[in-house]
Image 1 (cartoon, rainbow, N blue to C red):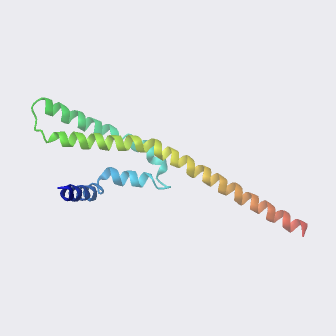
Image 2 (cartoon, rainbow, N blue to C red):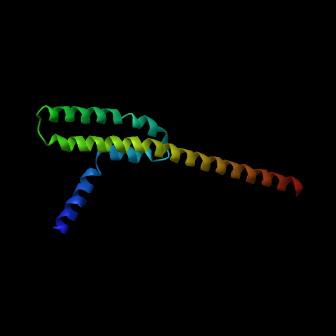
Length: 119
């Protein structure tokens, strides 16, 4: 039984790794895509509407399998909402690293210039 659950979990992970939100999160975690983290949070709004519509349909006698869509929509919505602040922190870390690199390069160029003058 445990082996069956484990295999189903692995297959679900493989299938869900190709989900559009996972591609979006991977794209916003790159150095070039960090600035798009906050605008990508706005994509959580359509997922909220989908979940709301599915819940309304279920309450009015719709099929029960829509509960899976509700869970999927809420999960994707939460992923996108949490990804926004994380990309802001990563962008701040990348910015501070760039500033430190520029300062270090400026300091090295200044010392090389002074060494040439005093030789």
